[in-house]
Length: 204
Image 1 (spheres, rainbow, N blue to C red):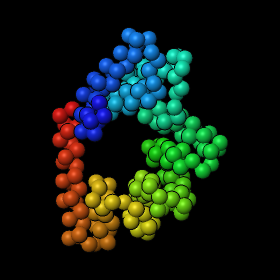
Image 2 (cartoon, one colour):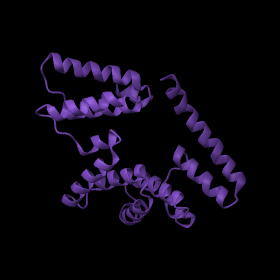
Image 3 (cartoon, rainbow, N blue to C red):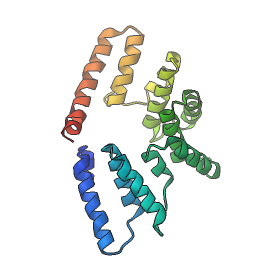
Image 4 (cartoon, rainbow, N blue to C red):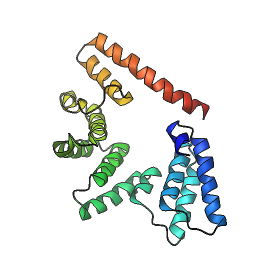
């Protein structure tokens, strides 16, 4: 299942995870929180929204399963997820995972001003940490939607220019600065990276 996920073969990954779930049911073993979360996530990647919602209901009604804060995010219930992350952040102010969760929810809700402010605050203390690429990508998205080109240079260094997001944002900035030959290189590179991912998704 994990190998299938890495190859974006989500239908195959779901098949194996559901086998594991059914085995637990036959053995009268409570499925692990991790297994439930993974199946919910895969169902949403396959646009099987009702299945994902049904699994959440199963988890809420099953003793021994703790509904995780991130589950609401995986179910695309952004407002509920944001509220849950903010409650957890009050209890754990320095927890970066809760901060990133808030950022992702703000991004998907289109709260660009709030996202921009939170990214700027977080970037000051985590610009050299292991999560810098995720922070940079969210910050760049907020800057782009607010048309704040001047702030994008501060974040672009945090992205790997050989990643899809890195190539995309570098292409945008190059066009904005009228460096068209450089932009063409980034666009070509982004297409190559996207092609590999799309090939797997199209087969799904």
